[in-house]
Image (cartoon, rainbow, N blue to C red; front, top):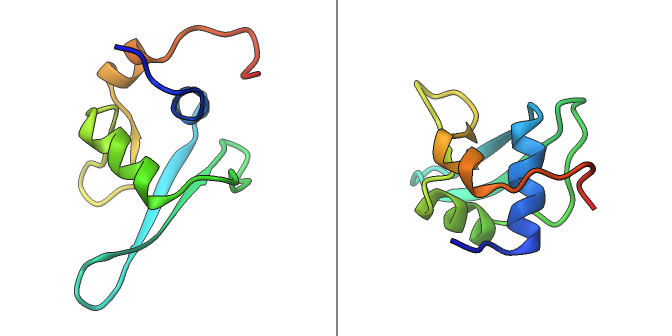
Amino acid sequence: MDISRTEQRILHLLAQGGRIEIKRDDRRKLETVSCFTRDGWIYPGFDIDLFRKLKRLKAIRSQTGQPYRITERGLRLVRAQLDNR
């Protein structure tokens, strides 16, 4: 399955130890999503639509209320790259 360049970048970042944190409003609806690198920097250009697409592809998952991480399926989707460019 082909995925976009942006999705590749996010999955590559997550494979290197990054995480996705979400914030919900009072009605439990998604308010904001943030993608963090393993160094703690926020990755720009990550939005709710991209989060939902990765979740629909089952490339990311959260366990026991922890931040979202890459899954085995996500690791298969991401192509090996020397650097993420």
